[in-house]
Length: 219
Image (cartoon, rainbow, N blue to C red):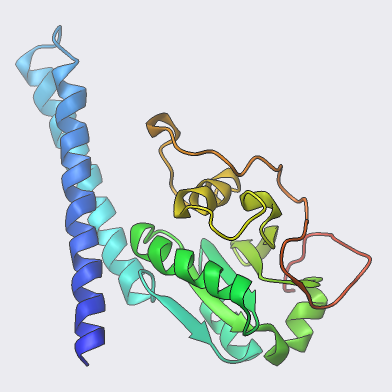
């Protein structure tokens, strides 16, 4: 119970921090608009405040759907249940090895930072249908899913710098390249994930080899 309370407190603090950041962004934008009258500035402020409130309501919805946590799902049936109705979901297909634990560490951080995306993990050995359908042949593999369709993959570490000591921001930017998270590119970053979408490479442990690499949906 103590761990659950701590996790909830972290998530709530994340919501507060995001709201504060949005408010500061509003203030910065308004400070640039020196040529506008007071009525114009107030109209812009009200619009931004409305957007902030809408975002906060969305955050509450995400939290209710399990966002903000990095949860393990235990069956293929649970996978489809978790995916249903989600705009964006990252699923880590894993086995008990060191590369997968590295990915676990980073996703545990990112799930709290990016409430807009659901993050889950699934033991590949318990999901033979999905590993075959999604052409999972190396672990770790991240299946990047938008609107119940797999749009991209991150396989092993090659797209993350080729070694296991990469920074969380590297994986964050890789996910952003596939539009899996909201990301402010103007803020800059380490930008190490330069591989284009759809390229499967190595850097993990071989699981199953297949010939096809096509995107998959779940119809």
